[in-house]
Image (cartoon, rainbow, N blue to C red; front, side, top):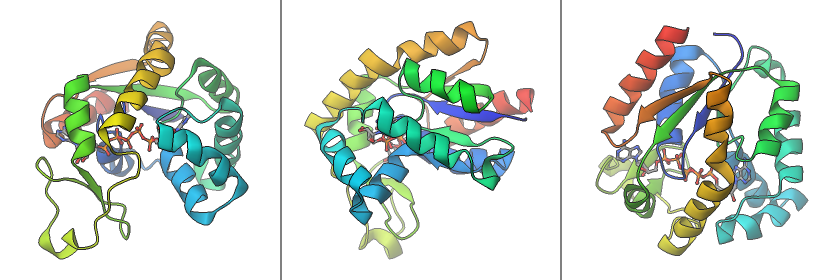
Length: 208
Ligand code: AP5
């Protein structure tokens, strides 16, 4: 498939969990705006300092910051045949800016209920060495990595509720925007990690 693929869905839907499988299937590099922002925060850059307050509060980082970040990333050589976008776009202006610099071939929308989201996010644990994503119940980590796992600062119940509000108000309308273009592929995310992965593979293989 030429062009970029967008992984779409509420916070904690399982976008990052499924991204590795899709990059293996398509060969497209995984571009996560959340990871880019967390790297900027960790580096203490001006951008990271500005973004941190929004992220900690569960709010979207302003479009002006995010659009600049993604436009720059899409100029790298490895992006020339398209990328797998995880967490971008999240507003109509972000989608419009994307359409000026890239062709979107498919939008995979992982659909999960709000109650399941809270449970997934509060139980999420991350491996800072490998980027591995685990869940205390749904995807338990192997014992050898358990000691080094961390919990993201924004993975608490109050911030998750704010992130869900931001999703419903600012991001969800994009589903209709992409549906009208014939690009939206809806996937039932209320299933096991493997079942969701297989459903995405099946949907994409029809389009590859
Ligand atoms: P970002 O890092 O993108 O966070 P998010 O969208 O809130 O998504 P998550 O990373 O929380 O979830 P995910 O869907 O990847 O789920 P995961 O696979 O980890 O953004 C963070 C912040 O940065 C935002 O709040 C915002 O401030 C800012 N930001 C980023 N991009 C932006 C943009 N474009 N514009 C403006 N601001 C932006 O899975 C979650 C858990 O569930 C894991 O524990 C996993 O093991 C488990 N799990 C996964 N699938 C299943 C399953 N099928 N069954 C059971 N458990 C499962």
